Amino acid sequence: DPTPIEYTSGTADFSNYVAIGNSLTAGYSDNALFIDGQTASFPNMLATNFALAGGGSFEIPFMADNLGGMTLGGNPIAGNRLILSFLGASPSPVPVEGQGSTEVSNKLSGTYNNMGIP
Image (cartoon, rainbow, N blue to C red; front, side, top):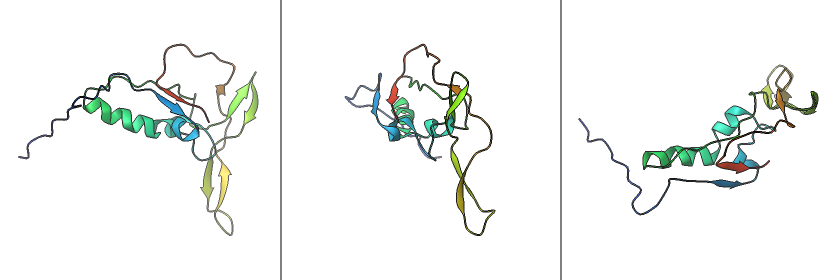
């Protein structure tokens, strides 16, 4: 059996990692911000690996769904994420069906480590 790898942080302190940045930091992809994109963000990937060496928790202010749309006062203000459709003569991006349920006027409570803003 192979010897398991024991990760160590050396002299680095990964106990409180905070990411600050733009849309790439937030996990914006497919023309929208949505849960799966946020989960696949590079800061979350880094934090997952930092945790192997004793890093702390990494909190993300997740969107409400995987559609990517947003509302203000219940009125849509941003479209859903795009997917590639192969139904026409050539592939083209089309929005995911449905209405995003992230209400942008809701105030989130708690502390967050991913402060990326698209």
